[in-house]
Length: 416
Image (cartoon, rainbow, N blue to C red; front, side, top):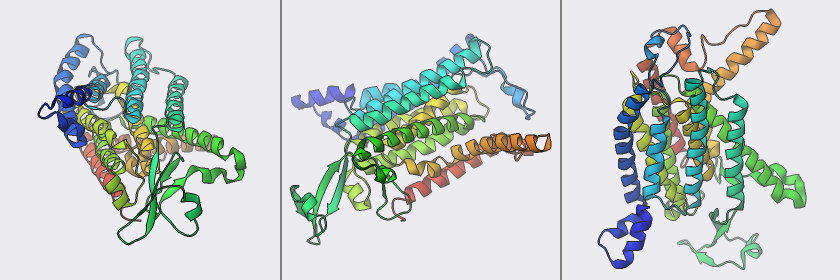
């Protein structure tokens, strides 16, 4: 809103109004505002949750010190959601299709998570919202995102293509330019569903390669596959973040690290000069996502003030489902979804530990009559608790791993 206000006021030559054109300035304001909102609003919301006795009910998992968390306020994800949405509404260009999608994602999954926490806390139902309803909500969001990216005229990829004897006929109607070496090239815009393959030169993967056999049906079929991929990514990362939210500060700190990385990738992808230098896809208007990333980073760091060990508040599914969904949709928009297994490696390992534990237990129970386990307990962070590692040490080491994975993700831009 402030962005649009100052855009309007600029015609009156008001000093300083032009600074709101710059993504860097607005991103800085967004981070600061998000931090202030989360830290000031956080204490009030925690006190409110205390008064309403909206506390965590702890199951006996045999973990040391777990009952100390009994009664700690939950549903603190409201702090994160407010600290993201308010600064974005203030400083982002609200006509940008990518900002609109990210706001929808935040609110959509926030509502699903809130319903789950509400049922657990107020209805005293430990199971919360039924799993099938969560999946339906996540699938619905995936459909919205996938179909929007397919249908919106504002969603385009801009590529710099060298002109050769083989493709001259194809691009002869487009405006050709000459680079410093005297070679012809065109700047070509298209809507093909592409993504980035890490560590590979000329690293664009075209989803249409999966349906090469479809002939004239290639275009509709490739977008169906793309939408299904978006649904899978949103569901997987959202649930992965939810599983990671088991120790004080673990999910919050991991999300902040991922948010910084996604902000850098969005800034580079949305900048014509840097995307050309790095030979990556230039996605017009994606730079505006840096504003959202700033709010995301500020919100998670601000929440960490209260969520670090010993936690004064838990985010609950209100926060964890939204954080995972935000990361997934953000990565899809900037066409970096194949980097998710690296960047979100902590979420991936946590999810795999549960899948392997459950699968192995069922298989051995069927075969031997008694189930066996790979880990002392799943998700993986509980395995280390069982071994005897203090909770802060586990969280800190997971953060370190997350930082290492973030660095590797950035490095993929150059090493290929």
